[in-house]
Image (cartoon, rainbow, N blue to C red; front, side, top):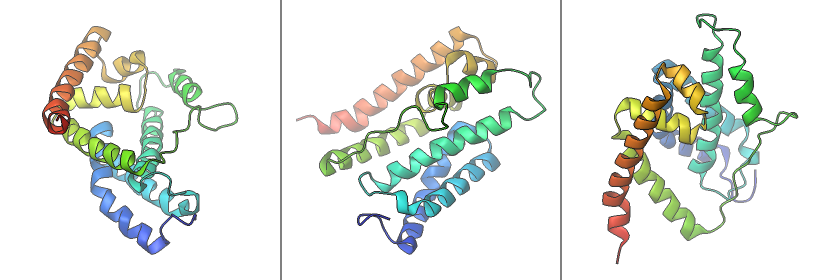
Length: 194
């Protein structure tokens, strides 16, 4: 662990306080309580096991949410490959892996480190407001928005996964963005104008 990283006991306590927030994020995307619980448990375990890799340059929540993103994708991949699907021979899972991973197994893009404490605090507060706004989206809009913008799943895959037409997808995304914009305008930007 780096000098800025907390000790294991402290990290475990901090992770436990993040658990409800992580569970909400996972449930919004996975729409299955058991899968969400699995993703969060795996996230917390990975964070504890990888504590020495936490450099302290980003907020702990940012680091853990990054881990959760990958665990949610793992859950989606795992459950997409279950034999109950009609098209078990599809190459879409391989396509998704090609988009996310390089040939050597590492991720295509790693997040930039955040080093500005004031900016980090403002970002953390902004994402708390954004998360609250996301929770008020209708379930289908929230799921589509997270699949497209957070998990960066391509439109064709989303349409196939949810059984919707591309026109419907764009309408759902448009409405979600409008609602988020209105919510952020009222709860974030409106409060910070001079």
